Amino acid sequence: MNQVPMTTVGAQQLREELDYLKHERRPAISHAIGEAAALGDLKENAEYHAAREEQGLCEARIRDLEGKLSNAQIIDVTKMTFTGKVIFGATVTILNLENDEEHTYRIVGDDEANIKNNLISVNSPIARGLIGKMQDDEVTIVTPGGETDFEIVKVQYI
Image (cartoon, rainbow, N blue to C red; front, side, top):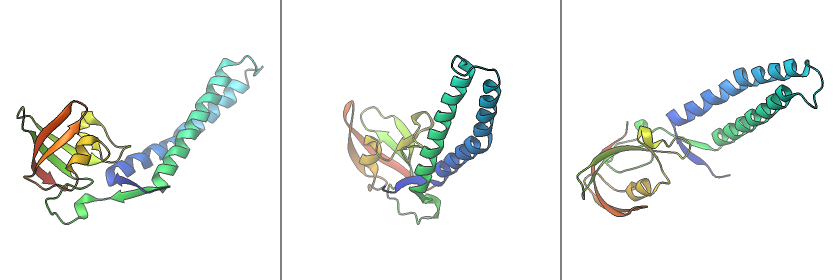
């Protein structure tokens, strides 16, 4: 499997979730299965079947997180020499030249993306249009709403 870029913050969040699932959630589910099994007939025991289903979902998420972390290429942009170029992990402020709206985004991995927190995936149309460009460049980005012109106002490696 190919390596997947991830910020140090994103990797830490996945590790924390994995730790929670393995050391808190998994034992709690096992306990719930034991208690439900003690209630008797397993064929018609809804609590038992619900706990087993939850166990399956938990184990699948654990495998997913372990896979993502094992294939992660963790990039700490704060340790890179600032060049003014938009790269993975950079925080970029852009100005929409059509309506003068300014937006600040951090370019992160797919699993970290959260537009409400201004974290955009490196694979999003905006990030793909910005990667490799320099501060003060004007770029045209094809978005679902059509082509939009932006100016890169500020690039930060924070």
